[in-house]
Amino acid sequence: MHEAALTEALNSDRPSGAVLDAYETKPLPPDSPLWRREDAPALPHRIRHSPYTRPRVNAASASELGRRLRGQPLGNVVDLDAGH
Image (cartoon, rainbow, N blue to C red; front, side):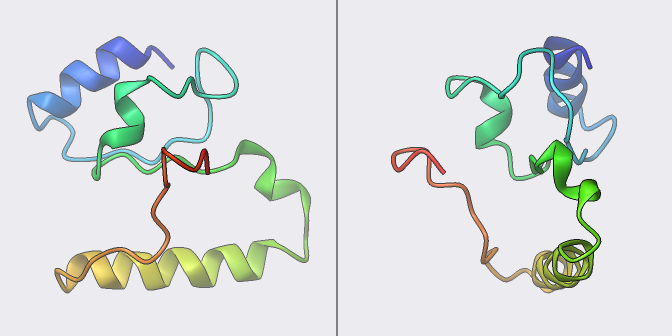
């Protein structure tokens, strides 16, 4: 993924959002502008490797999407100061 091009595209609302799980630099650097975007949530890339985790991640993702669509604050927000 070309992060600068994605950031530029998101700034122009084309596309209106993105879900990220792969980055130019791994892990995504703390100073990346993508961390601060509500329209581009970053997900862990290796989540698909666990059959036990996938149902919980799917449920959490659906819940977050529902909150977003209802205009409610997201429940699982990255705390950049805490580093997670």
